[in-house]
Length: 221
Length: 410
Ligand SMILES: Nc1ncnc2c1ncn2[C@@H]1O[C@H](COP(=O)(O)OP(=O)(O)O)[C@@H](O)[C@H]1O
Ligand SMILES: [Mg+2]
Image (cartoon, rainbow over all chains, first blue to last red; front, top):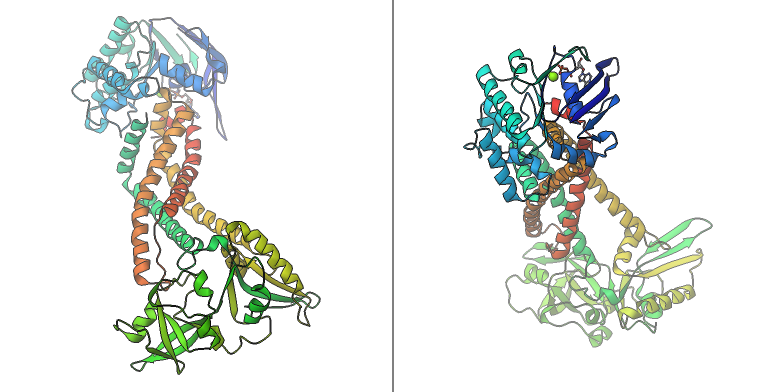
């Protein structure tokens, strides 16, 4: 499903060059639930962002769903992200000016779908994460766990084949973290969604199919 | 989609109350000034009481002698003699309305001094210009030929001089100790029409210098052509005639133009004998408007950039979930247009109030500005221009943001 081939990522600032990713190749199968672990600053987020087409690698190639995306235009990349990928971030990244329902509808705004259809799908997604009674709330009126569930609803509303989650439970206590984890496991099991998750929590990582460990930009396991 | 943009625009405006206030204030203030200025321009430029026949008229206001060797120059109004002897004989000139520049005289009402500005006119002046007579009528050729002491006065003068008297025809008005018999009262003319506004109009034969054979004097004229189509012909005949006018000694050039209304104004302000100053005047006005629009625009661009950068996380999210740069640029431009139009709405209300106040305070004597359709159209155009100008650059900058960086900034 995702094929990384010898990826390198160099960050250049005025004074230093940081080699954040140092030649990583990775094959992730369709329907796989993969977790990535490693100490802080070892390049986990960078790798995930490259997989999610949010950032470009300095070297190497990426194939998603057998398509080489290296020569995609901005517009084509946007459409690709919209249809194939869903993101979950550690700090939720909800839009505070929008209500829960509007937040979840967001990915559908960039497709051809009617307002009615959008509402239907968003409500269904919120139901899946157990938040159907909070449609009209603003993000600031929700707890951290609830916010992350809204973010998951937003990630799945467009029915993407791949979900990329960067420390989705990092800001939550273990009870809420487990809830989120359960939602992801069910998603993987029932819908066959491919999931790549960065985590700091060994117990969470052990619930997934495969664990990749990074150290200083390289894969060590 | 549009509804969604609207939703988020309103939400953002509500949340960032201070920015919203500053932006709206800047936009509405600028537009108010523009709208009032346009109303003023419109007042000056479009046919206005009593000068309704501008499209078939040319205006002769000044004459210029030059000594090109020594560099001397002499510029003044034209004489009655010049207008009567050279201009009124042109075949294409159907009628010529002659009037002098306004001269001040003193009258006394209840021991209080009243300055009365008067103009000398000929008889056709009253036939070309459509003064509205509230009482009586204009003087005719007979009164002019007899140099009768008769006067047409303005409504304002009637009120200042005669107070609340109903009927003043046949009464006498004393200016500089000369008694004129009032034979007509006309509606007030806005001071913006310098050639036509006065407190009192009297026969030109009462002036001391109308018989002088100098080319320069204290008069000006409106030349009326048979139709609009005849105007170029009249201009050509006039120009040919000017070439034959003998140039006074000490000089080697003579310029005297018959211009359309706007050109006659710009020539006086920005031009000279050879150049009607139209291009210069238009350039100056455009430059002024541009500068005037530019300052608040730059300010707004700044505010917009701050506003947008504050929302970089939102931009990152939207991009991550499938918004292309183009879509986002649209979104922000539309948001900005919504903001601009809100500002325009406020500006509109402000303009109406300001115009009402200006008219009430009579800042320029008898000038009545109005918000008409033309003014509204121009303002609307200015508004769209303003909205795009101040929205495009920030939106473009925003769309170039790197997604990961945008998401990190919070
Ligand atoms: N925009 C950037 N500019 C410069 N260096 C960066 C940037 N983003 C990340 N880095 C560096 O790249 C390395 C990997 O970062 P990251 O992928 O965020 O690590 P992790 O998510 O594993 O904590 C770190 O050393 C970090 O300092
Ligand atoms: Mg990280």
